[in-house]
Image (cartoon, rainbow, N blue to C red):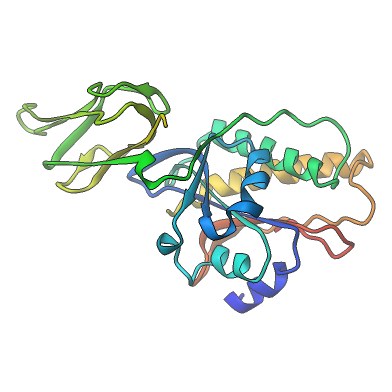
Length: 263
């Protein structure tokens, strides 16, 4: 399938969810990343998706060649989801997002029945809200805290040790007060590589997306059998394993007419 065809398939949709996971080195809490140019339209939609964190980026950080940018630029709202760690299924995160997708669809009038109440996300709009910590030395990273915890400035996050002697080469401490939303999952770390991300108090995981997709298929079959898909709506789920342009993603697309799809 060509990139142009992908755009044509979904360009008249009411909402698109472009779902990704982190790479194999980092694990991330469920979050939605939004271009500040489309903040007004996308943030209210993101609130309904049950994610923990909404990250509004500056326009200069968004690649113009991406699927999401292209659709948002022609007026089709796209929410880019990041969660988990590459090549692993984080079941809790998948279930959390599926609940959010169902809630969003309920709000949009696509199905009838009860939906779970979405959690209230942290919203970051100021680039200075987020602190990045890169490894000062190479070695083995041993975390001292769990993911998605609140830290005080100076709290120990982990240690980098020599793999042969066990000697502590560096201690990774929180430079600010905040919540740890990204942490290194792969233990081997090189100097200068990202270890953690903290939001201040003021890419390629196919299997996680397929888990979400299978959960949605099961739920929509149940809703269809019960006659709870509202008239005038169609739902199509297409897992996208890997293409030349869209790598490791699933796009969830909602339309409010009889040509509607969920991709």
